[in-house]
Length: 511
Ligand code: KIV
Ligand code: ZN
Image 1: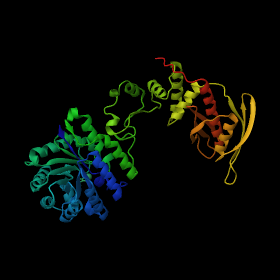
Image 2: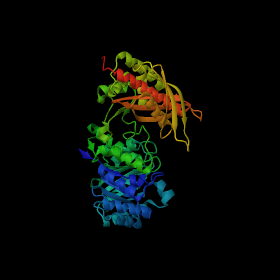
Image 3: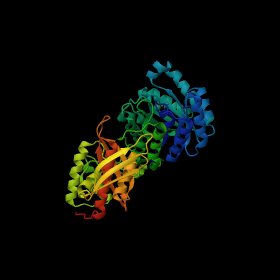
Image 4: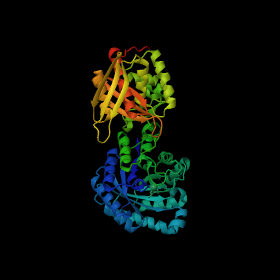
């Protein structure tokens, strides 16, 4: 199988975009992860841009042993000398020099003739070549350049020593068939093209960077320049994870592969998010949080029967632990039963149907469903029994000076019992007093408060998770006094625990 080389420019094109700057230590951490990922060439930065950029490229060049280290330089001596200074200690140094070739850039930005730009390009490649063997020449804005001029400059750059020639879609303007055709044209017209690798570097302004890069490799390009999570100038660059996973998943069609260790992809994406504080959208291909999450009833049903029905690559192949079935309003009965089975509840069809109906009702009302919602429904439906413990009265004292104290009156099997207790806060004092009155020894595993309505008069909903004798249960309470809601939740959980102790949920799977 033919190999496609991956040049990652997260630390250069990615880092130069707003919101993605990194300090030197963060760049080094990222570079080390890119090396573990198996990136062939790490574009570490643009040394002439600043002292910080220079130092970062130098440090990365001296620390990375497996990947080539590329330094970017415009087509002039100062840039190239500075780039070389930064990477000269790298095990595999790589200089990347560039100049625009489109008439739009020549006229409106560089204000130079085609001949002048031609000379500058060739002299830059020669200077870079005097330092090291591995040279990339980029014809910036190639997709808006005159094709024949582009071919002439590419041919001369190869003659001058470029081992890679890059055909960037700098402004994200091209479309797949056109770009594929351009690569094919270059392969036909440039007489010495077999002496260099054709690289592509696509921006995502029209959302086509991945499609364009794939069209290029299908037409003979053998290096793709990309970034983790697709970060980069404006709408970003081609995302590494997408290109790599397309080649991996569709090798039956492309007959191409990369050196990337795909299982490191998710970790690399997460590291970038942690460093920059910028995450990807949930539906981002490959690395989004929904990329391996299934909710719709039809999909989850198929998935539970055989993963091949709705999964074209395994989550493990990109380093995600496993695909998740998300329970929500689109979930089907099959997914719900599977989830409940994983939680140890094996239900009769009748109970499953009741739980399913209640679950759908709640899913229509609430945006996010948590596991406690499901457990509450299960408890309401299968743990039905008259409450053993009832709250009659409650009063708590708390504040910055008082020792938190709770006085609680309860009714247990027709007997009224009152007691008082102290704790680390009003909720703790109340829970301890209730445990004393009921003689229960449960452990509080979770306590959370949600506001059901807005404002300071909001209804608070408290959820507690208790464990006793190896049995776990969830309790809920709602009130506009948070302490009261907490006490109601706690007593609710104690009642359910009491029922569970006497009536262990039976395993009666009926299908
Ligand atoms: O987008 C572009 O053309 C670039 C070049 C420097 C390769 O980033
Ligand atoms: Zn770019």
